[in-house]
Length: 191
Image (cartoon, rainbow, N blue to C red; front, side, top):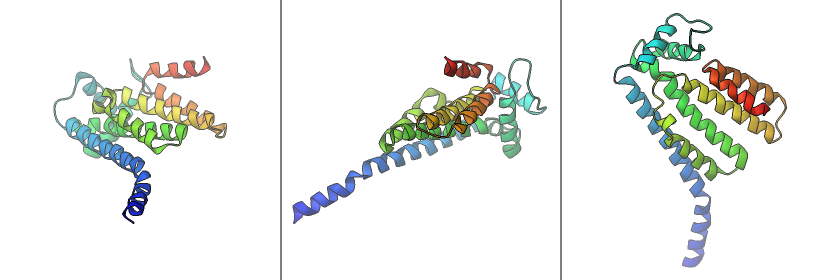
């Protein structure tokens, strides 16, 4: 009887590692978001952040040396938290968490395995670009747009409707509105 109970317990636990790993990945994402928000709310702005903040006070469709998306990101954050370091850095911090969620979605769509998706999210959380993404820089919206474009291409790869190609194109355009080098993704797809 004890053996049957142990076997039943082990069978019930067999499905739990993926759930536990997914919970850990989600908790790590929330912890790192809180870390980014705390780190972003303290300390002086870097030179480029002040430059982007200045742009955000007079939104345009482009600036002398950058496309406009980082200024729009900064404006969105300052509308919520004012002209504070946290307001300036809010959207890049949030976009990092959305990047991790997108990596999870890509891995899950490709493999259908919750464990693989959770490990992908954990790895994405621990890369330097995500941990340190509390700084307002054009790479934050660019990386998010690239990842969303990759997700949409994975949907096409997995048999999704051709309209997903158009959505991927839109996201590549959004990435290009963040940093001109992002348009190399389009060239890579054609190659």
